[in-house]
Image 1 (tube, one colour):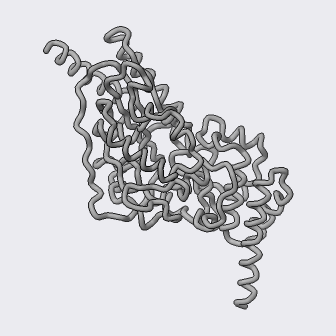
Image 2 (cartoon, rainbow, N blue to C red):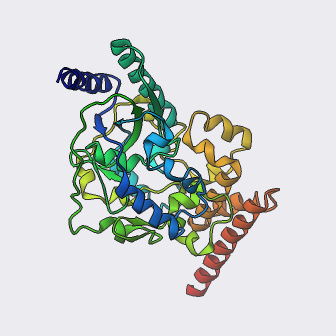
Image 3 (cartoon, helix red, strand yellow):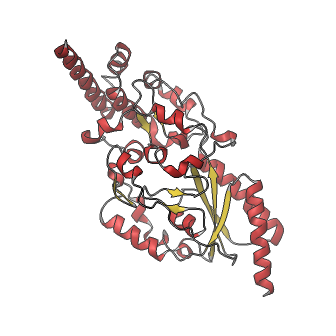
Length: 361
């Protein structure tokens, strides 16, 4: 009984410390992820993970936390909101004729660094209070089923688009975890509230949400522009529109996001005007400039070549203007075969547009 009261008091302290460190929510879950493991196995069996081979790499360590971090009995799950400006402004940029769309989560500082530092600070406070204990921090950086854990910890439920939704604040937030050997009291799992809504399914540009709660990543724009390193399948290029890094359509249409509030976290404020940058300007960046402008950003992970590949596709979908065509022509003979191929496709799109316009006149 004494240990139970002690752990309950410690949990209350952890929630308070987490709030002081900038997390909007802290929850505790156990480590039984059996249901999530079944869903993962089905997803992998259907090859819906595409080239994300790391989803298979660690076997059951992803769904059995104690196999990944020995001694783990509880998981401290945290939420940090990241929406930096109003959703109407983001909505207005979708499929814009000349401005790039970057997923809202990637406009500011790399969230991995921000959350990992705060989680370490939280662990330090716990250690200062109780002494040494076992833990390991994760921020979308290891074989962790963070969404299933967040649902068990009461952070929110996994919506039909497979993102986590909080009933009071929507889905514009990052997740992080502390695996720990502390037998803390667990929170009640969040229950679903999507009901009959299918807005996210209907709005997806590439029909990646193949059924409620089922995502074929191979069709997802986030996968195509971030995870995929090869040529983007032609069948998806028009649907990508101006989305050069990730996609937010399923969140922008979600009714629960009417409750979302812009974050006060300075690290997530847009950098270098990426929330309203011209495609032609971004396409003209040299690799040195790209490295300078993406320092400390999540965008860095795709590399310069895929950055140009993505923008070439977006420029192919942009309005046919002298600036767009000239920008593409400037990289027609790119040393990268990947970039050159997408530039050629984009130029053919503009030639087709020009021909169509002549026919109308």
